[in-house]
Length: 478
Image (cartoon, rainbow, N blue to C red; front, top):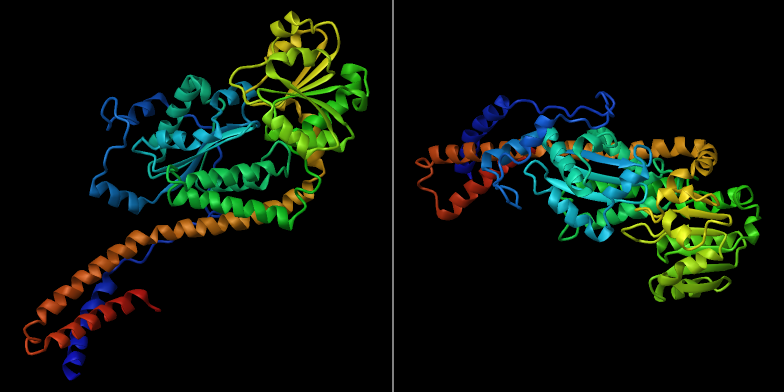
């Protein structure tokens, strides 16, 4: 025991002298002290060439990074970014070209991560927004890589696409996603569908094929938690409306002016039988409408709707007879998952639908109705961009709830930023531990001659003792 105590005295000065030479850990600047920027993405063409300069032609996988590159990345830390567009920044004609079905979100994220500059990625594509959340250590080439992907996917030249895109980084990106999840960035303030969509984005990001990684998946998870908290602790979603209910409300408001017919007497037709249709039928039924024609590719989903709404009388018609049903309807809602428009000026005129009033409300993205349908004299068309009257009234009713919700979202965003900031200390701690272990081994080796008389068991005790000293010095408290 005396010899072990002597060894402790030998090792302690070396460990303390090493710690005295270490630099103080740098502080992570808080979001309140940093200058926040929210700008549209506008990258010069010179960045485009940087995306592929380290890749072989035709390569589909990311080049393997050297140890020095990985160390450099760990020192810099991953920053979060978002590039995208929404109903606030881009017309539906642009949004529909970028839209990606949910089953392909991970596939798109994988393609984005093929760039050596993008470490993690997740895609969120809805009827009102298209956004790519990604993490990177070098923001400019990473942004260029993501923009290049979006341009290739949408077939829109980069200079044209950039006019509609927005780009946010770090705190602004975090704040934006939390507002999206909380329903504050929605066309209909407080609507609940977006929270479900962000949740799906998070679940896809942590799948085996997902590319959310450690940071982006944690960001999405935090935003879902924040969205749930906002809806449970405020009245932001009380009486709120979705796109489907806004469509029902808009058609009710415009029925007399466009059709000279009370909404309660209008004959209704809905094209499509998915989730949007189910929500739409819910709101139509709540307004007392009991007869609805459903046009779909098959009978399965419309029959499921009929079972869910026993008080509504459904007429189920296959897609090939769509214009026969439209011909005897006053209001047509389109919410089909179709790659190409289903209704156009030519089709309306060729089917004899240009002689009597008809209202068409298109809530599909991509659009189900060609814009030229509005040129038919008797036809009035609306799409998701035409819901401003409903939106204005909805927003005015929720000003107080929006302020309360924003405060809660900022709290949750700060929690994520604190977690992200702690990641910057991990490389320094690892280096400190490695260096301390190196000093420990060196000091033990120096004392090996003096310890030659110790038994193997006593030498193991010396090893444990020296490691314990180093660990306690590193862990604190101070």
